[in-house]
Image 1 (tube, rainbow, N blue to C red):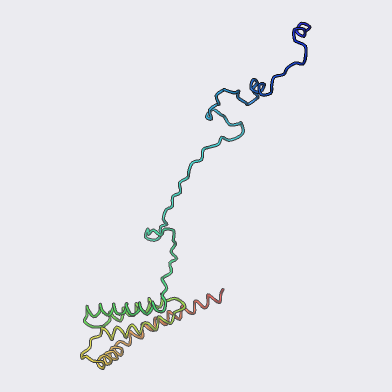
Image 2 (image 1 turned 90 degrees about the vertical axis):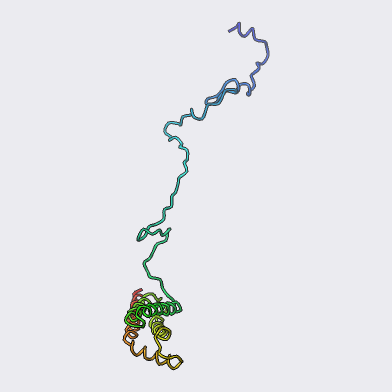
Length: 205
């Protein structure tokens, strides 16, 4: 000990700088300067913690919905309710459908007979079922108008002139009064039933 103290020069001892000391002596978990960094693949997770997984994009497939008859609905659901007709739509459909049935009967049997009457019943039924609640009265009113229009346009007339047309229309209505009242009464009954059922639903609420 005496020998080591004698060999050192007198005066305060010089300490190495903090930067040099930090560079020369690496701390725990610190790599020395100039050393290559460890690759990321060799790093191991700390015990007790799950390893982070790379995020993978998820694919979302949108498939069209399938309804009855394997018909694609593309996200829309069918309620099963028939399409409702307004008052104007009911009149237009009644006239067009009745004229179509009368035209087919005229082409096949050269007149307006039982096919025209059955077709008128079907038209009145569809009108009463498909008309909306606010326009229920349009169904029993549009049917007779369409019936008269079909007789006026497609019924056979023996002579020309306005008087002959009026007489033919009156005769056609008298001869086919059974079909006319049957179709109109059917539409009126269905409309009345719908009105009563809707009133009961409103009262129950």
